Length: 203
Image (cartoon, rainbow, N blue to C red):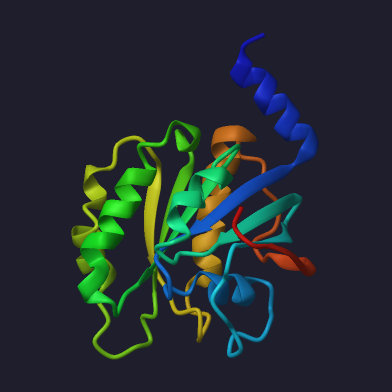
């Protein structure tokens, strides 16, 4: 029995997925997560360290790690790579000045061995803001077509209005389900089962 088969059998038994939210500071990672959990999105503060939340999606349990994106915290991102099924990279579509930094950080992450094979969902957030970059512009700015090592999708969205946030999660969960669970997926609307995030400062 191969290692991949063993991993698949274990995951089939657990029905869990690990999702890692990363991105530059002020991209809207925590706001998107709050939207997914049905919480108030108008009172969000920067994540200093990380928060863990759990939501259900059909028969799956999604363990979501939301890690701060400040420059001083980025060296600690590697502490959260282990067993990641989905890497969610959140982009501030209105922050044109830092798009080069955003691209460099993303492509550096994709070189990490512990993220090999993880599904990549790029949320082009803040589409509700006038003058924001389109998903096509962000796709080019981040050089997404050059990515061959991961299944990826760019999803324009607005955490404030909720537009396309659920659609992005649906695609990511479906992609992992096809790769790891042989396409077994039930339901399309995630429901919060725990809104008690665990907080910790960087170590």
